[in-house]
Length: 356
Ligand SMILES: *Cc1c(COP(=O)(O)O)cnc(C)c1O
Image (cartoon, rainbow, N blue to C red; front, top):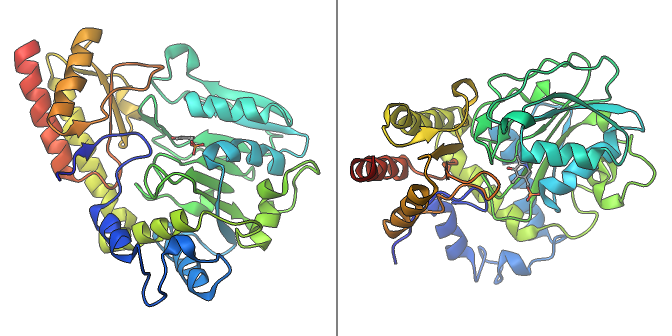
């Protein structure tokens, strides 16, 4: 059986080494006589896996002292609500509307307080990161560091002074180096760069714990979850274990700084080709191009469809753009090897010769 190059936006490719390790451990983890799926989350054997996963995440992400790391459920979407419930305190928050998920986050927050849309590129199809004006009295500022559907990325971390910066990093966590100390809260659904779906990583600065609205469901309370070490209820034990394997793999690759270089190289291969193509055109503004999700079109819906179909036959799969934007999108997260991108560019050249 041949594995394909899977350009899916999420759930997405995992490193082959990680999957092989999962396979090897599947029936019997170490000498436990059971699968990780069958372990109690309170058992000594599982707690060892859990604690190592947290420690390795802190290591690869560069999480400083004074932050709690949690592995929760409900995806990034649950965090849209949780952030507002825990931090808004009935006041106001600034949201930068840079994409579909950024928009979903602010719509959710509007249920719990006043949302100020500090900047938006919605009118322009989210092809860039908008300029923004922050409020002096916001409880926090919310950004989406990489916009998965539109293929854009912040080229800077907003300076919010003493106001906590909250970031949805679902589609670029651990793909580039971030100074975690600039953030109050970071969250990321794991199914793009880390693990199977069903785990959301949450990093919270400790002074931001314990300010939730009384109506906050306890599984969404940052403080209660931090105090219970993510185990107020049964966590996604297996997903967290796979996340741990990915962190180990990432360390072996040289960590985030090393993989960031590879990610830039991968993205440049595609963008350099797109910039010189007679058929394909990138859709995001150059300054804000994502290194994780490369969006492009031919300008002709039939050619787009033919491209996706022929690519699939070559083992280059899931290149269709999101249903709300059309065109194509190549998601090239950490686990996509550079050979996959080289093969994609080769195929694009060939398709262009026949169709331009
Ligand atoms: C995928 C994605 C989400 C949604 O994540 P779920 O885990 O499905 O809730 C939110 N934000 C961004 C930036 C994403 O890429």
